[in-house]
Length: 322
Image (tube, rainbow, N blue to C red; front, side, top):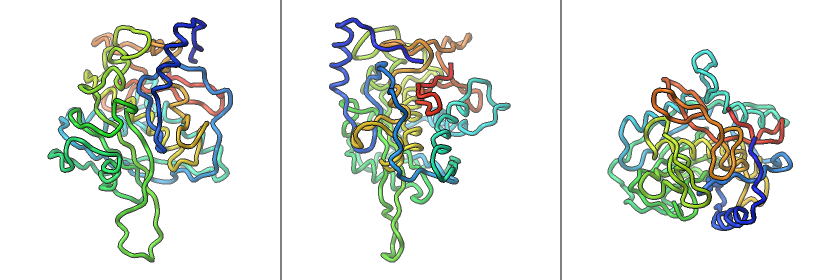
């Protein structure tokens, strides 16, 4: 469980200055530098909107230059969400994901969500250039399947995206289908996620704790579990946004606060990865004896990941794996 803020007025001022720099678009985004904050006193409110249910495919749109080994880090993460406890060492990615399933049990429909890997689309030639607007991100997301899908856009380290580094590390939202040819067909929305590789542009903002933070208390960076600061940072952001997509896909699901700046299941627990977390300290994590890498979740193919704490509706507190 996360500790609360220090009573030090200096630290409080630092936190307030950092918080003043955060903002979200209508689609919630992961905060730049996630300092530990007081946890919400009440469970996230349900705004009666639909959740994603049934079998939903995850389509990955890789924009720019990614090595096959880098793409494998992300695809292995998704393949870890529903692996059986026997196939993954504990604590596991699948155990982490079960917290999001609790929100589905709270709704009257009691329907469930099952995520499966869909298509992977490569755009290695930067078809829209190396400086993208938010509208172009949605345009890229629309290249994936638009029914029963979450389309994930991942931009390479040399791609600048509107708001990237200055106000956000990634975002999630929804868009109306653009592939309908008949006006008689009922329109529907698809969910999308965008995450940028911050390895060279802003690792101190979007790849913490694998890089020293640009704001707040300073501490030595942790060793990334997959030996790739940019991609391991992307997984943290992606995991946070995936949990937000599952529980608040269309902006009227589970969240606290205003709809255009919501606290969601992961963003309600900023900077918490293990027990004992406090500003500048991610918490008491597991350490790989052979590599010295810090992690809190085991995944498919022997992978290790660092995943954010999620707000557990059954305990009204931030739940960590370790």
